[in-house]
Image 1 (tube, one colour):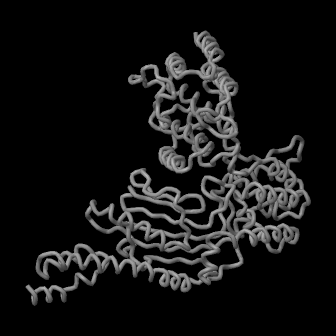
Image 2 (tube, one colour):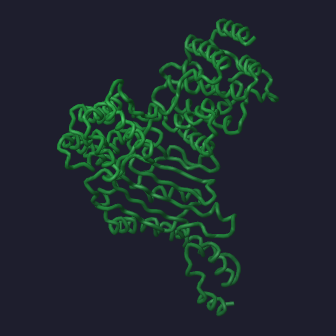
Image 3 (cartoon, rainbow, N blue to C red):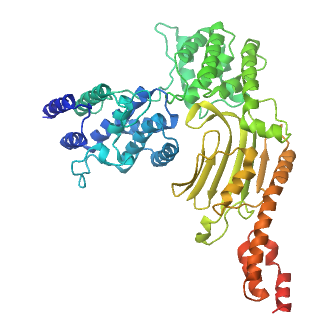
Amino acid sequence: MIKDTIKRLRETIGQSNTGHLPLSCRVGLMKQIGNVLTVQKIQCECCKKACSFIGMQNPDNVRLLTKINDHLYGNREIAEDVLVETDKLRLYVENNPGMDTLVSWATVMLGYDVHYGGTSMLETEDYHGEDDDDFDPECWEPDFIVSLVCSADSSGVEDDKYDPEKRREYWNWYLDMVLSVYEKPQQEVIPFNHDTIHIPVPHGCDPALSDKIDRLNSALASYIHAPTNRKETDRMKPYAEDPALVRIVADVVRGYSCIPVTHSYDVIRFWYCVALLAQSPNEQATDCLSGLARTLMEHGPGELGILYRILLLLPEQEHLQRLTGELAAYYQRIIPELEAAKWLAKAGIPYPDSFEWSVSFRFTSNGEPFFVSGDEADKNKWFSLSVELFGPSALYGDYTRFTSYQIRVYNADKFIHGLWNEKHGYLLHDNQYLMKDEHYTPEYLVALMYRLSDFGIRFSKVPVDVYASKGISGKAVKEWIRDVMEAYEHDCMEEVRDQALDVYRDEGDVGDTLNEMRKKWGEEIPVLKESRFDEIKMQFP
């Protein structure tokens, strides 16, 4: 019966001038299938189709989709953080419209369905035969979103920019996929996983090498993060002494893609394999590392910093010196152009000859490091502004770009929050924009603070905490903050003066005026609460 329905739907696609398969037809097909899990798998296959079609993908989208896929096909419990990751990806999509985020939106819709154990395709009480275009984009089904992605021309997804033949091709693939999932619900149509690294045992290898490979695989599975220091890097030293094993590992690394904009990858095992190769003078190992470095410099940066860190941890390895020099030259070109480096240079603060350093400081509304009021109503009035500057890192959601700073603003109840870096510049209130595409760097921190004051958001001029990593003068950072905040303080005091004059002009005695001043500025100016002011009030009743 399903086959007959699919045959009729193929005729519908063929007769359509736009190549579209109407929503009513798809709803009818899903109701005929009638199983929530199967329908979720169908939508999951659509999302995987989009990933394979786009190629350049947000790794956070792929990570979430991988968890969903593992749940649907691997019979695994749905991860507790799926809802958190879905919400986070949704916020990213809403602030970064584009082709790749349209793909991520399909994953967001699927994430909610899977987390809550349902699917809107089968919850049709309020559905009356409308087509996809009759609904707002945020209500579109994943299968329709992917049809837009797969049929859009090179200029993007606009109403009049779709190729009918590409759209027809997609919907015919969709019907093939639906039939496959219906008939073989435990078999993926598009394989999709983390591509876990497993060092293979060659056919006919001697028992000693086979045993060493088994021990290496066990070791790789036991680590919880990529190597970050010399002790962790040296874990691979015993394995690097076997030329045959080095060649096998080099073949694995060479055939494994670690550019995270295209897919999720086995971060821990991959970089421990790189650490193994780095400790071998074998020509195949050094060639593999050089090829990896070129790939990341040309198409990344991705996780290039991990490779550079591993090389720096092994200064005695002569065979690495040329590659280390190439990466050092690369970073020497890149770092001065980063916003964080420009800020340090303008402030006259030297930074170490390294790519891993950081500076951070934070301001709050009342100079207290944490929200301490017992009154829940005050949560929306207490704000924190944090500034982080660091060496070159891959931009969140776009591993083809560097970032070097991040400014965050939020209030205690998190209903208001903002983010500024090389890509973003926004302030949201309950997911509604107060500021959008307004970019500020650390150099213009005071200008950002002025802008935030338009929304009644103000900060103490003294930071609640300041941090500088080794090689950067914390004292110099504090002096810079003190100097630039003088302008902000001057502006604050002008406002306080104007408000004080307004209070003074109001009818009432000195006591009323004092109470009003304490109410307005008591948190920011604690001295107003001292008892000596009460004595003055008694003298001037």
